[in-house]
Image (cartoon, rainbow, N blue to C red):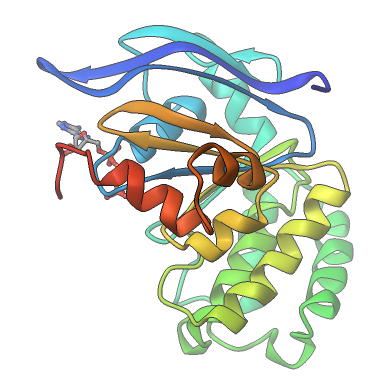
Length: 246
Ligand SMILES: Nc1ncnc2c1ncn2[C@@H]1O[C@H](COP(=O)(O)OP(=O)(O)OP(=O)(O)O)[C@@H](O)[C@H]1O
C-alpha cells in the first residue's frame, strides 16, 4: 500500500458500558475510495466522528493526514472535507452565497473563492443556477453541490456520510463521477453508504457489524471470500448475524 493517509489501531468508543465502536483497525491509502459499510447502528457515524476529530476515542487511536485523532482534532479539521445528509448547505442562501460562505470558513481569499466558484459552476453545469436558492434545487443537484463545496479547499481527505441518500441510481452514478474525479486528482475519499451498487464502485470496503469490522477488502476479493455474486449478498450474509437492530 502507498503511504496510508488514515491509520487506525484498536479504535474504540463506549457510551457508558455500551461499546458503539469496538477495537477497529484499518489503513486507507492516499487516493483510495474507501467504502465504510455497516447496518444501521453498526457504529459507522461514531467511528467517522472520531476520525474527523469531533469525538475522542475511549481507547485505541490513529492518525488522519499525519495528525493524531485524539490530540490534534483541530488540525485534522483543517485538512479534511466533510459532507453528510444532515449537515451541509444552507437552503435559505443561494448557490453562490453558499460557495462564498464555505470558501470563507476554509480560509480562502476572495479572489481564490471567485476563481474556484467559476470552475465549480462550470463543472456542474450550474452557471444559470448561481443565484438560485439552494432550497429550490432538486436533491441530486444539492448533493453534487454539497460535495463540490466540501472539497472547495482541496482537502487531503473527504469524509462523506451517506452522501447520496434518497436519490435514484442514475443521479447517484453522476455523483460518483465527481468522487472518481476527486480521487484521480489524489484526494482520498472515505464514504459510508447503504447502497450496495455504490460499494461496488469503491477501491476497498470494510463492513462493520455490532461495532466491529467483520470484512475488509476490494469488492472482488470480498465476493470471492464469501462466495457471493454481489456486494449485496456479502453484506446480507454478514448483517444477518447482527445483534443491533435499529
Ligand atoms: N451519544 C451516544 N450515546 C449513547 N449511545 C450512542 C451515542 N451515539 C451513538 N450511540 C449508539 O451507538 C451505536 C452506533 O451508532 P452509530 O450512529 O455510530 O451507527 P451507524 O452505523 O452510523 O448507524 P446509521 O447507519 O443508522 O447512522 C447505536 O446503537 C447508537 O444508538
